[in-house]
Length: 619
Image 1 (cartoon, rainbow, N blue to C red):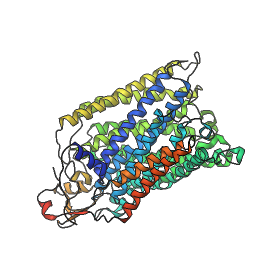
Image 2: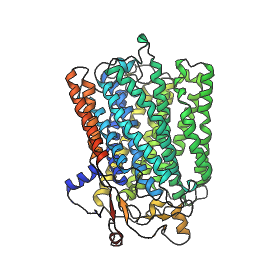
Image 3: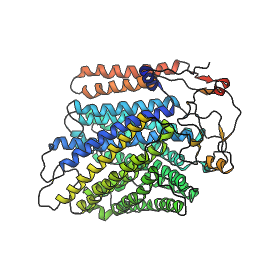
């Protein structure tokens, strides 16, 4: 092993660097670009849906295209936008918050990204190859198993590949947080974002295998003539619903829990106070994760579970309001008496609290099994779901990206532009979704292509669509802010927010080895503890010495590309068995890449102490 640190310039050198990188910070940027792109695609699909519903009996899109837009909007936003953007935040912050030089398995981190990326591309290829999936993002059988064309096949193969990447990522962060914390970083000294990422990783570990099993069964039903979900052949389509929601309900908490942790860190930083009730917040996070897993069957109230099962799952669902309430009150008590700075991340955070609480109220109403028979499959469910996901997850992503932007890129997003983006999005969000509660109570069904005149639904739908346009305007202003900040390129210090946690103790952007010396953690809010003692920087836990780093690798890209190619072969072998050659070729690329990875010694390299003293890796 020898020192192999060298800077290479030029477009192709940069492209190659990102194609082969195993650095968690660069993988965070890859997740940001890909997730941001899919967020825009899902947003355009949402706008087309709302334009279709702007007036009664509209013919803007056909019924078939509407079903495809509806399916792809939900699938894209959940699997290809929200999940990767959560991984953006986890990749940029978790290793830095625990004082680690990288994640536990850098190679797997890269593999997780490329699997997600190629799965997402495969799914969206359906638009250009005969039509996208049209059975809803939940793909309920038998609608999905009997859907003509290959749209649902792309859904099955795309999500299978993408889901494998998410599962790998979750396991990686679980091991990282357990094993790679700096000296002194006990569990009860971890920042809340890291704590919630730990609980989220556990949820991913247990929830995604259920989806994997379900997708395999559906793949065999559609592509190889099995009958797992066909009642006429002894199958049962309700099994799909159970498998989907055993994954699907924890997925909501997989998305929102990391952002609960992020909001805690943001509120503490910009209130200049230690988080109120830290221990209670940790306990509430674990309890929400546990209960979130146990209540999937509240999605099945109307399938005939029986009154006892319905009652148990109803009570368990309502119980989630207790730890969630603990969190909300602790956030408010943290702000109480604090020296509050209303920055853009804080603005999104403060807006999140009432918005998410309203979504929670809708959830408690839906948890009442008897009442759910009335709400089920109406726009009330659409309103509740979006209040939780947009009011919780999307608000959190805007807050988190603005908060950690300086750490990722060394530049600061413009505050005025940030506030200019916030207001139309915030107002548009409530205009779009609040009125949908009433549309649902008035009987407007969800997933319907059009509604008829004189049903009293015109004004509500018009307001909802106008609100969606405001949200689009807010998003465009945010993108303009990103472009202008990138072009301006003004550098900021390592700690521009006067923050409290460990990631702010190193330069922005951090050197590729993160910490020159592993820090010694002496309390909760590690950096703030040092600031209080007048140090202003972390005390090292070790003398300056050589740092071992992993080599970049092109193998994760090739493994994922192989599965991408094989996916086309599996889908089209139904029409023509010669496509099996494509499936075999793709699998051969993947297996050969795995073989090379297995037999090739890859011992990494060292950055020597002398190079560190000369400032290697710092900008």
